[in-house]
Every structure is written in structure tokens, then in C-alpha cells.
Image 1 (cartoon, helix red, strand yellow):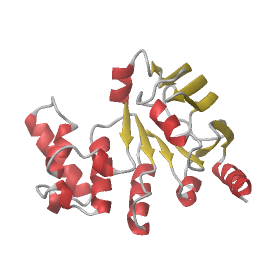
Image 2 (cartoon, one colour):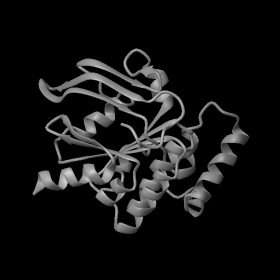
Image 3 (cartoon, one colour):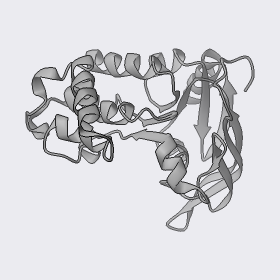
Length: 232
């Protein structure tokens, strides 16, 4: 991709990547280099978007080809990639592991000095509108609050890459906008899988997936137009 804002350091690179899951081909011979700061991944259900996203932090292993994220091979250097890449799931209940927001955020900082953890947790809670809910059972939070907590638990670790798999799908318009604004404001490189074409249009670059292949890439308006035409 050219003509897009660049991130410092090596880009995300896939070379001849194919993926098979349960004996079924899901991605076919994908080669792409992603250097933009914010990248939208769009396409119909079942087109391969989520599988592509999961390749970027090693949740899915390629059947063939290589995936490198900022210089790290996602198979040979999986532990390093997991430290480098923060992943936000569609359903925050799959990501929130601890009983309360404060404990969940602290989990992302395990191994650091207690005073640092306490200060950063409190700051993150306040910044993301969760200050009054630090000790509230996470199960009692609203859908928007849960997704904000799931995203905050990724951001607090300061990853260099954030991959978000349809993070606004379960949210109302207001909360979806809040999550989108927060994602696009990050200094990290952001890859967001989304059905929200308004959010996709705000990114620096876009990929369109179709039948496990990249059907279009580049400037978001052009890629979104190609998607609309394919759906007509």
C-alpha cells in the first residue's frame, strides 16, 4: 500500500499465506504489506476477515506462507508477537478474565511494581469512564462498559500493534463511536475488522476480503466503493 501514513519500524507482512481450518481452505495465497497507521478490514461474513486478524497475533497458524509483524515471525517467535500485538475480541465476555475492572486491568500489568500497577490502573479507569466501577463486578457492567474495559485491558499494556475483531458489532451507535474514536486515536498501528463502513472510511487504508482472498486494497473510499458494488 502506498500513499498512506506510515508507522515507524517494520510493517505487517504476509507472503503467500494460506490457512486451512478443519480441513477447509479459509484463506488462499494472501500476500500483502501493511504500513498504514490505521487499517480497516472489511467484507462479507465468512470472507476470511477474522481468520486474517487472528493470524496477526498467532491465534491462527498459516498452513503455508509466512506472517511477520514488525519483524517477528508469528510462528517461530509467537511469544514475542503476543507481547507486541494486543487483540480485542468481538465479545468482551471472552476477554474479561477477572472479577472486577481493576483486577482485570492489573492482570495486563502482572510482573510490574505494585505502585506502578495501582497508579496506571486508576489512571486507565478514569480515562476510559470506568473510575466509578473499579470494584463493581465486571459481569454487572453494560455492554459498552465491558467493551471499553476489554479495550482498556489491551491498551494499558501499550502494545505496538492493536488488532480489533469487530469491536463495535454488539454496541449501540454511541458506544460504537466511542470505541472507534479510542481505537483511531492510538499511536500503535491499528488493524480493525469491521462491518461499520463509517469507521472503515476513517482509517488510513482498507482491505476488502472476498472468498478468502484480498479483492481490493488501498484508499478506504475506493475499497468501500468496491465492496458496495460487489454487494449490489
